[in-house]
Length: 68
Image (cartoon, rainbow, N blue to C red; front, side):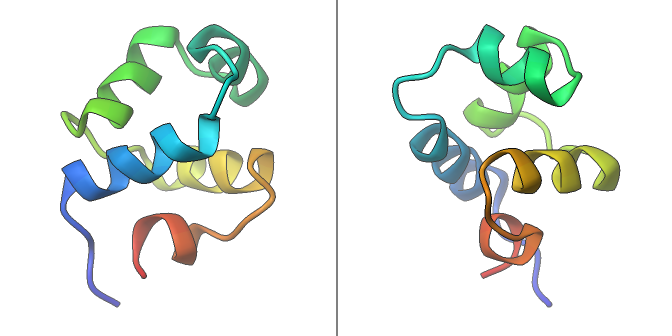
């Protein structure tokens, strides 16, 4: 497995969020709005536990968001 560049991951997360607000997704996943913003801007990569929660929320796999 190869980790993708943070900017690529950020773009995927932004696309998955669609019309939902950052606050809505962040609250559902249990992270701060600013943390989600940093992930979507490619400034940070989430911890593994957050990766799992994001994948579950978006009904996809960690692999598809962060590695493919």
